[in-house]
Image (cartoon, rainbow, N blue to C red; front, side, top):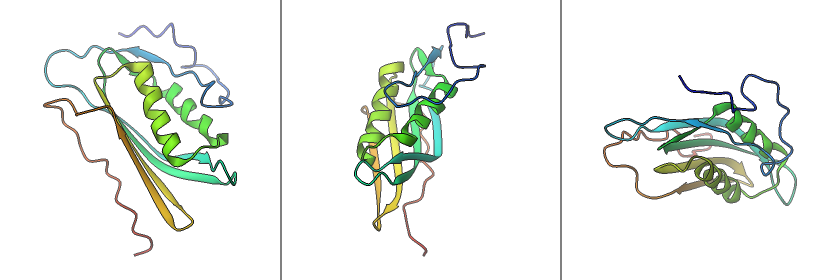
Length: 153
């Protein structure tokens, strides 16, 4: 059983962080064991941030896959971290890559990739992909499951 006494957010009321920089991204121990790497997936189909120029909301479907070594992202802290982007102004590319880098810094995984499928603004959808390197050999890595943007057709 994992010791969760060091966690400050799980099981308690926590206000949404004011910004991604002030959000606390917590981790818990992970025992990988023998065999191929495990792939952990987080899907956030309703991610929001703000356009840094207009202040208008931007929406994305995020898919985060990572192969943990010794630490897992605690999911409530990840939800709070992602919520902190709702009032944060940044371009799509910056948001997507910053999230990937923050998770890498917190967990030091064997591998991570993040796919940000941003909904169209001004008629152009922007898809942003970032990963730390080659996926672990022998790991089962499913497709992200997000279809390319096709408009109304």
